[in-house]
Amino acid sequence: MNIAILKETEKNECRVSVIPDHVSKMTQLGVSVYAESGLGSGVDISDKQYEEAGAKIVSDRVSLLKEADMVIGINKPVIDDIKSLKKGCIYISYLDPYNEKSLIEACAKQGVRALSVEMVPRSTRAQKMDVLSSQASLAGYVMVIIAANKLKKIYPMMVTPSGTISPARVFIIGAGVAGLQAIATAKRLGARVDAFDTRAVVEEEVKSLGGKFLKIDIGETGQTKDGYAKALTPEQLEKQRAGLAKVCANSDIVITTAQIPGKKAPRIITKEMLANMQPGSVVVDMAVASGGNVEGSEVDKEVDIDGVCVIGVGNLPSRVAVHASQMYSANMYNFFSEFWDKEKKELVLDQEDEIVAGCLITDNGAISNDTIKTHYSGKGE
Ligand code: NAD
Image (cartoon, rainbow, N blue to C red; front, side, top):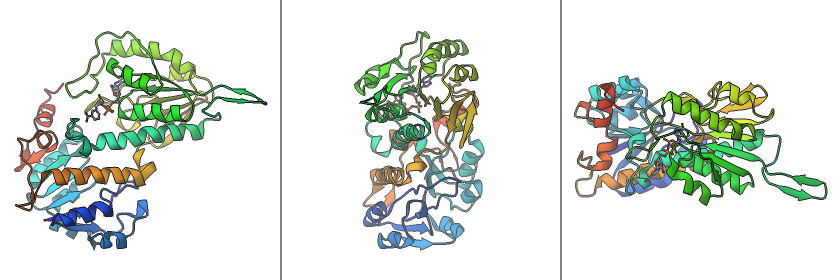
């Protein structure tokens, strides 16, 4: 089996999908690994290090794709790359299948078996392959550091002969994987942390990290069977904004992480709420690339709105690309080794397996994933 590891081509992407440690482990399983020349430049890993781990370096991307039985990447591919793949080739990366219908159709047409890392189920067994968690956790950390760099104050309380400084107030909206890591990071730096999430079940986790959980009565919210938030109604969102406004106004930093899988991110902070914040406050919008939680936030820009600095970073994990690559690569290797059949020397992707059923999007020349088929038919939630 030939595995191709691609160099990422997206702007501002420094990560690599497989690091040399995992190349070496894959070759020990009996596969041949081909790596695109220069793939590790963003994390200071040379082609020579990949060669030493057992990979063969290929400069021509098209021939790398043509020969591959499996391709591993991070960002969703361009359709031209898909057209170079042979029938039956397995392609694993982010695919954004809810929004990328033409890409998914191109995979099906080409006979590619496309695996979407976003669709790996959030189960105990799949935890070690869960890219959403590994990358979100790092993103949570990065947001707090970015905000600290911008804020003209310090995070911790200081009692000195020159006076007492109160701790910075940090408000985290959305306490999923990224939000919880942001709470932990801000607490470690000495900030006073408030947090809110529509899923009331996270209250205990927020408290255990030393954060204060804000309660707002917005009626029935709940979560899906996979533990994701359900989209709020416009009336609920309005109630939520009213409940959040006061805490935002009293915060030095607001970090928003609210997402609904497959849907545009909810608009949580309005320009009116920003206008009520103290000048010099900092807002970081993690959802900027999927619609934005904050009115006026822009991808990869810092925008001044009524004296408040609103920061949108499209690719947060890439800011800590070494550790992000290490974790992503471990997720990829864990996926591979889970489904690698040592006797047959092939990757067995059986639709009866709940992880495969969750993340295999196209198979046998068609869209095979039930959730995505339902979504494209317009009958999804
Ligand atoms: P996510 O990125 O989809 O959303 C981030 C957070 O935003 C979530 O906590 C969500 O409840 C919240 N949110 C959505 N709309 C909101 C709104 N209007 N206002 C405030 N908050 C809002 O979530 P995620 O971080 O990927 O985590 C989703 C779930 O998956 C969580 O329950 C998490 O514990 C669970 N999970 C399970 C496993 C596992 O069992 N292996 C692994 C990782 C995550």
